Image (cartoon, rainbow, N blue to C red; front, side, top):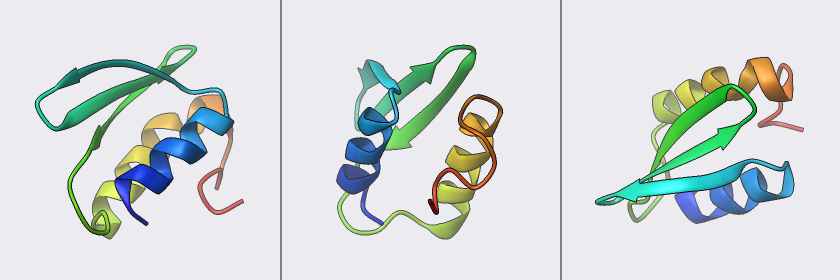
Length: 66
């Protein structure tokens, strides 16, 4: 999954874009925040797992694969 596809999915789920620092964007929903690196190509699996884990308390389990 690319960062652009992930960003669109986050917006559809109600996660808001807060700020950018270089090529990294901070997203937030309620009390949950995560950083998405906006690099070319697919995001590494570990990075996707970390983003999913960061937002899990607010979006529920397995929100990324639904």
